[in-house]
Image (cartoon, rainbow, N blue to C red; front, side, top):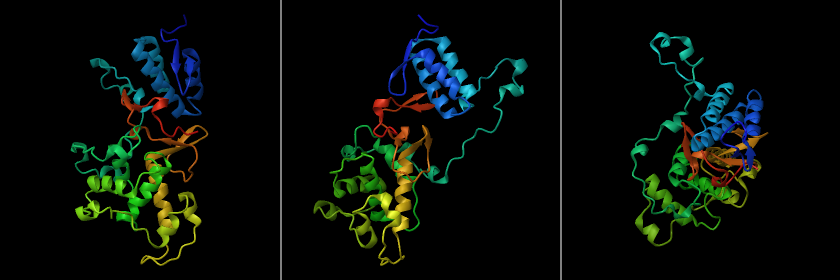
Length: 286
């Protein structure tokens, strides 16, 4: 038996000897701290499950060497209670975008799941709603706005390719209080009503919208860049782009996408860090 009670750990998509994974964690600490933090979280998860105290302490030390905000361990005795060693070395309060703070009463919302059947079972529809709410557009609103979200959700396989516009808009109407009439829902008239530039873009992949010809017939003038930027914003609200094994949150690439863990139904909380198994992901960054 090796040094630890836990002999093997599953990370990132295979079983590895614990001591090898620990060594990797220390190796990446300076060059790729995010990788070390993810390794440490998996180590602490396995250690907790196996009651492996020594390994748990190693995971905590990896958090420390990677400068994770989770590294701070207080000394609670009276003599050292005000010692500077008992405080984080710097300001670790995260900057939260204003758009993410505009949640109203969503925390207390009683979720109506009656229309959630359109989503992939690996997705948390309530988290998808919050992600959509975080994306703002000055010039694109109402159905065109939700059409762009619809396109991205299909690309990411969060909803099946054969999902009808009507089924998606029924979900939208339920959770975004759009006020679309019961008559339009009953008569199957609920649709995106694509016109002008958006009708042309609807036949193209969003990555091509940036350089698409624009007929400029909308009231606001040319809109293809607005639609393109909105598509990228939705993509980045739902996923990261993995570049050199590091998550990038503001990329315009549609390759190597990895789901934001908070959008997955298989997520779990590990000491304040959201984690999910490899099998829980729809887009794994490869």
